[in-house]
Image 1: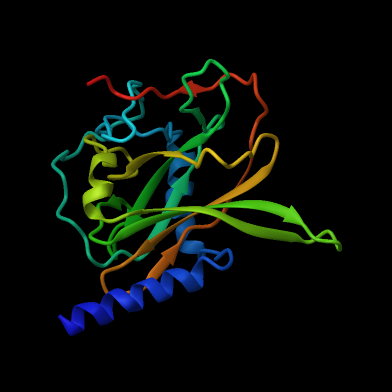
Image 2: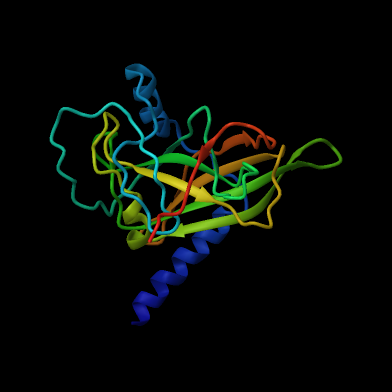
Length: 225
């Protein structure tokens, strides 16, 4: 029990230290991106299981692999995290008719030590949202706004059932807090991965500008019960 507590403490400390700023991934993290450009893959993942909270009723498409579509064993030795955003990543979870943007979608791939292909991990996926401001000297200042932590049981519903040319991935649909007014603001998203041994990996940051009301976007509706 003591050993388990030490492991959990190490992981939390590592996550806290990396979330204080943006971490730049190594050049190896570009492998999946290069592969994507080469094959022209639509990076919105297909066949994703629908999460319970919130549920979505939309469907997505992408190029499927013609290889073995059996799910791979869960990988403990994840070495890289890669994220992709579509040209229109915005979501609205509102049902009041305002079409206010309050979320985004992205695809996440975790790479093992072998081929640069996505696998499923045994650790925790952490999505970090920042607002990007400017100080008096015009320098960027990243203001942490929200984090979503997804251990294996919470990440499982976001797994995609079909393997793409980039391997197995997660299709995430994130809703930020109601008290965050980000209309017209610049934001940044970083996806981190906390391994079982406490090591934390980070993707490169994704800079985005939140559109103003009236922009067409994907509407996400809760599942009917």
